[in-house]
Each structure stands twice: as structure tokens, then as C-alpha cells.
Image (tube, rainbow over all chains, first blue to last red; front, side):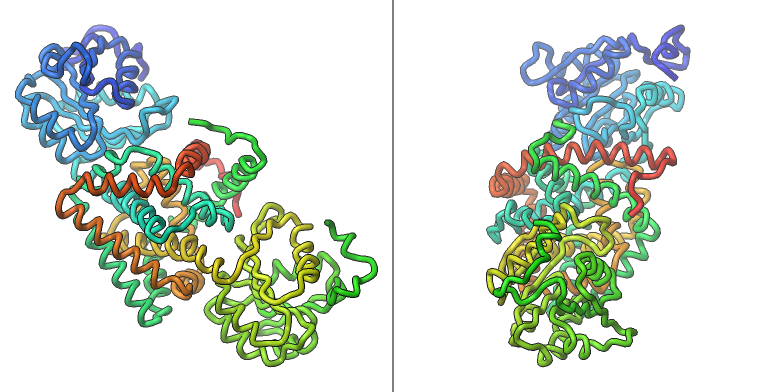
Length: 307
Length: 307
């Protein structure tokens, strides 16, 4: 399906077309701008409401057929909550935030159609092609969802359908567990007064990658990372399990129980299964690339991307 | 300095030359084989002692000028301890294990020259060029150390000199903190019954890399990872700091203190300083490469490395 197939006479079962008025609330943020570009590329008339636009969010709600909330995660539920009473049946509400249960629930308080979205990419990507978009078609007819889904697919986006609960459970690993560990590592390095540049002189490629990914997180917004790690409905469970795990490893350490650690390690390896050998192969290619990249940087050439 | 400059008349101040007899104890392991190749490439006569070789470690000690311990980390101190009384002045003892304080201390019980080594690379690397070797020249004349160092440098190895204590402190971050977190993540995924392949359907490139690095660890030896995380002299400190950090984040969570997390996050970012922006740039190149790699794998082409 490409853009042209979306034109032509509107299917009577379809409520929206590329002529539908789109409002992006929070449209001046990175993600808002990206999705403004997305809808504009199909010819939708797009209006933007943000903190300093003439258009207010209230007017945007009243004047549009399709409303996209592209606001900071920690304010999403409050902002939807203030506007949801203005929504009409026949409207489509969507949000672009990193959690889905609470925002979708809040949008469902309206009589409108509701689709929660979570772009698994940043607002600065050069292309949609090959990117993944998690989507929760919470209240929308199958036909209309196929139309909307087609808009994404036609741009090369992989659409991963899920319920808000499934989504947030997966994000409790992808976002909470891993980003929380990065934040704990950052705090630990700081509290122990470790000079990160000094550790990098002992570079193993795997550590260099790990530190680059950690540094990347800390180069970004504290608000975003605080919100995605703390507001997930499963955060309490992840914290509790992480603490239990840490206590078990503390016991192994205190009782000098190397065998206990080896057994735990092997059980985790078994749980991960043949993913481990795939990961070994894929990461080897990555490590080779990383060594090259680090040598280029040492020799003063630029890495091939500067995004 | 290249290999040829190491030939010629032996400097009277030098005790060893490429004619010195080398013994690799544990020479049938991956790292032992790699260093057998290393010394053989210079023309040193190299003998290997391992569990099923005719040459015993005791004979190897008696018959060689240069002894390299290439044995599993958790057995290193015990093996050196059994043999150290056979060492002579004029001999050179080295080890290749991932920690330095205890093995070096054990070798120093001899009257021999002592250099602790930690190759920051695996036994399966294709080339020494560009690899890093941490080295603790614990008891050796400057002239002899320059000769030995030259052997490594001539093969393109970056030699990072440090004391055993400095080394183990750096490894408490590189190995203990990061590998321990991987082991905790593995245990957490297992205990929560998370299907890793399912999480990967929501792929953000950064998460894919993180999981590939984690999977890579679990594809390897439990013995090695148990030993490097538990036998570091600073492991207790790392565990304690990690626990304190986790408790602080648990409090943030329970009191819904997003501001507390943002402040902690910002302090860690400040501590890491301009490393964060460098890391953002370097990791962007890495993420681009990883997305390409993942797409190639999805499309059935092989990653460019199969090591």
C-alpha cells in the first residue's frame, strides 16, 4: 500500500481520510515535529498546539478529526485528562508516549476512537523506514485500524500490535530494568569517585560499548528517564526482583560461594536459550565495528555518523 | 621496534633473549595457545605444560627462563602457590589472568622477576594489532621491562602500565559492576519468566545492543564470570554501593519522587562530564551499524563477522 492508494473515494466504512483535520498537541517537541511531517507528507491538514502557539489545545480538540498527544510522559495523563471531555465520537485520539496503560485508559474515558502509539525511535531519525512502532488499537473498528496502520506501513514502519498491558510489561524490561541499571551504574561511579576516562584506558571493546550506551542515556533528558523508569505499572516488581537478585549475589559473595554463582549463571543462560549464541555472533560483528570506530576516533577521523 | 631489532648481540644488562626457554603453564587453553603463538613468532623455544601434557608444571618451572601462567582465574593463586618455591632468581614469572593483586603477590613470594599481565581481549582474536594489554611490572629492572614491553609493542599491542591495585580498582568497574549487572539482569529476566525474543519484537536499537552484549556474556564460561565478579578485592565495595543506590531508587519510587531521580540523574551526568556527549556521538554510529546489521540478519544475510 502506498500513499496514492489512500486517495480516491472514501470507503463508506471509513471515517477519516487524508482530508481529515489533524491536531498535534505538543507539536513543537521533537516527536511532535516528526509526526507533523508524517501527516503532512500524506496531505493531511495539520495544526499544531503547543505552549506558545496561538492555537490552544482546547481549540485543537474542537477543530480536528484526529488528535495526537505528543507531550512529555510525566504530563501525558494530566493533559489528556484536561481535554478528554471535549472529545467527540467520530474523532480519533492517539498518543505518542513511552507507556501505554495509563494514557490509553485516560483516552478511553472519551467516546472517541483510541489508538495508543509508542515510536521505538527518537524524534531525530532521518527516515521511518525500518523503524518499529508499538501500537495499541484500543477502540477502533478493524477497517479503520487497517487504514491507519497502512499509513505507517507505507512509510516502511514495522507496526508491532499489542495491548497496553503487554506493552508496559515489555517496557518494564526494555526501559525500566535496563535504564534503571544504567542510572544505578551512574550513581555508583559517582559515589565511588571513578574517573570514566581512566577506566577507558583499559578498554575492552565490550566495556567501551557499554559505557558509550550509558553515556548516551546521561546525555539525554532526566525528565524522560525518570518518568519511563518510575511510571511503568511494573516498576515496583522490577525493583523488588532486582533487590532480591542483588541480595542473593551478596550472599554468594559473603559465603564465597563461586558454585552458587556458576549455577545461577547457567540457569539464566538456559532461560535465554539459543538467543545467547545468536547474540554472541551478532555482538562479534558489533565489537569489530566498535574497535574500528574507536581507532578512527583515536586517529582523529570522525565516526561515520554525527547524529 | 620490530622483531629484527630484538636480535643481535644481547645487551649485558639484559637477562633474556629470544633464545630464552619459555614455558606456558595452562598452554592448551585459548589464552595459553594465543601466547604460545606470540612467543613462537619471535623464535623463542616454547614448551607447554597442561593437565594432559607429558611436561609437568614442576619440570616446566625448572627447565625454563620465562614462565607464563595461563590458568583459570579461580585456580591461579593456588597453582602459582604450589610452584613458586621452584622459581629462581634470573627467571621471569608472568600470569595472564583478569585480576592482578593476588596473583602478583603470590609470584612475588619467589626471588624471580615478576610481571602481571591482563590481556583485554579474548584468546580467539585474529590479530594483536590495536588490542590493549594491562601490565604490572611488579619486580623487573627498567631495562628488562623495556625489552619485554617492546615485544608486545612490536606486535601492535597497546600496553597500559599500572599497579596491581590500580588495575583491580579499574576492573571493579569494568568487570565487577558491569558483569554483575548483567548477571542480575539475567536472573531478573528468568525469575519474571520474560521471553527475550518477545521483548526483541519491540526493538529499539539500543536495547538490541544491550541484550546482545548480555547474551554474549551468558554464551561464555560461568567459571570465568563467577571468578572475575567475586574475586576482585573491591567486589564488596561495589556490591555495597550498588545496594545503597538501589535502596535510594526504591525510596524515590515509593515516595513518587520524580524530582529526586532527575537530580540524581543530573549529578551522575555532571560527574561523567563531556564523556556523555562524546558517548552520544560514538554510540550513534554504533546504533546505525546495529540497525543495518539487524536488518541484514532479518533478511537472511550473515553479519559480517562470525567469530
